[in-house]
Image (tube, rainbow, N blue to C red):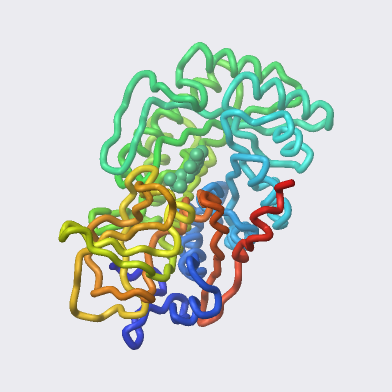
Length: 430
Ligand SMILES: *Cc1c(COP(=O)(O)O)cnc(C)c1O
């Protein structure tokens, strides 16, 4: 297992943020999400610096869907980042956390009346508009409030990338946004222009997730700048903002070779200057929206190992006290992770095991055929890189209470989210 962020091994034990994993388990129980706050903040700082946020107009918007307790909103704000939300619930979280709402981008392909009303009433800075229906609703509620709402259009650019490959097609079959250079897009632009309470200022695209190559983003810059220019020429609308979305890949296992935030940002910023010059246009304000790459590596999950059984010399199953309720990614799309025994990091004797969750689903397997130190019931298993899409996708299947989340830094621990109690589990029920 690769040590990430502030992880270190002292006396054969894993420490994160200067806190011993056995100490965390003793005080907060398991399963437990542990957030390496220093790593989160350092990653935010690299994005902030390398994307030249301070020097001028560029913005880095953290994609909240990856992980959004209120404390995360506060950290993101302190580090000077903007925030993407995709639902009324995420918006409400940001509001309650005191996040400045003019720095919020409101995404989503089917925002409801209530969500749009809430966004406008709270003063969300930018709506990222997905469809024609939404234009009508935003205009209606903005009119009621007597404001002019800034919007971006979500564009489907015909680039789709995941991990190592990407494709370019003329037309992508997607539920999101307006197809680039389509009649539907032109009609939407015209419609938006006619609305008194809407101001179209930007275009946005998001091309995928867990992407390791920067090349597709270069292609995206060219397509989006060309579109911005065309909108100016044909519709006389000044597109000042170009948002390139998120999707920057992170390390999960030794098959992953991610770029650093710095490499990524510098390439984009340079590419943008080069392409703008070529197209004889000013470089617009650039926005990126990293989610996973801000929080992924900073989160780890600690579990207690319970039952251990060998099945006919085929496989040894090691069961943990969590699983698809706190991390659904392996069951959902075969996501791979590393792991180790946090209480015995250096023991020599290894074995190959399969780590099973405790849910009543045979697909609830967290890690398949992984090599770890010879394991006993009562050991602590650590699974790193669960920060993104772990807690945010967690669920109460089998009436499993949500696990607690703590942040650690410089030897101190803070509770970000309490563990859910049984009483809270039935709170909504009559
Ligand atoms: C999910 C999402 C992101 C973040 O993606 P990551 O892969 O977590 O970086 C950014 N923008 C939009 C619109 C998204 O839907």
